[in-house]
Image (cartoon, rainbow, N blue to C red):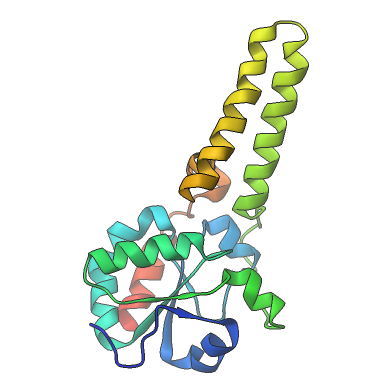
Length: 192
């Protein structure tokens, strides 16, 4: 349901002033969410969003939804998925980075170890594969193809604003929800 005051995107200060009225969904991985999230945000990772659609549809009928990620890209992908399913939502322009740049605090999870944010995980993995490919390429030139493959993947990622490596890294155990975490977030969403 579209609300008369819903916008496609809110900046950090607009979101902060309306935080008490918003249903905030953080679509980052659980490890990223644990490093710090907006007050009251519910963690529904992007790869679990379709599973949450029925509950999100009901929540949208009760209030405005704000979708958040680290930079805004995954939040925009989530907003598009929601819109394709008849659910109106806004995104936080610039994500949690813009939130903290605006002088606003994130709330860390006390009971979960934190992971690097996804962008940092991608940079580390891409760099490690490139260096390994170059080093092993001294022994066997074919190993340099791994470095070329990463370079091609980075160009494709930039052109399409997607990241296949992030999708793969999101499946690692430290980026997956704890058992029952998604169900707990959905239960909170239902009672919101």
